Image: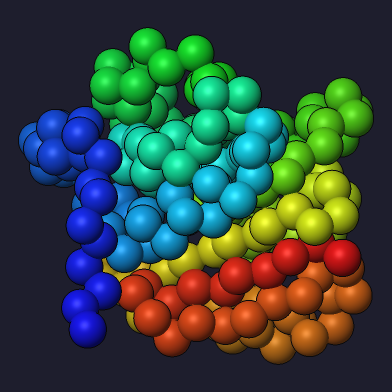
Length: 193
Ligand SMILES: C[S@@+](CC[C@H](N)C(=O)[O-])C[C@H]1O[C@@H](n2cnc3c(N)ncnc32)[C@H](O)[C@@H]1O
């Protein structure tokens, strides 16, 4: 059995080529993308949020799994890297690109009464910071996914204690049923209860 995805999105190679030219090395790996596309297909008409767009590698996988009624809000601090995602995926009417700090977005989404069916959190807010606030935005049964929980070459020296703290806290998060996956970059897959 090989777990290499057999259905890579058409635009992915072009996105990754632009990422390489821009020196962006933090895109999700294909196996993670494929898993999230599969999970996305379980939420027809769902409202999705990604915190940390990067250049759009995961966004293209998510939209590959989403149906035509589903919507993705993807939030990124750095307009330069998100510009690559906009360039490749800006024509997809299901995607709303937001350029701001995810910390600000969490506050504004709560004020707006946002309700989401799927959250992929790929930056500190919503994962190492303000996890409770992110979970408050999720509908019962919504999925919560984070990756890069196994040591990564891109981690700063002080990052491991953050990861350890997340894992220590996880069992006490009452409104999340979660499983740790020592697979790909290391994932936590949770469901809002
Ligand atoms: C691991 S990369 C995202 C990769 C992308 N999700 C993927 O899987 O292809 C993390 C991204 O989060 C962005 N980021 C970091 N801190 C942020 C914050 N506070 N708010 C929004 N984006 C942030 C970084 O600029 C970076 O592009």
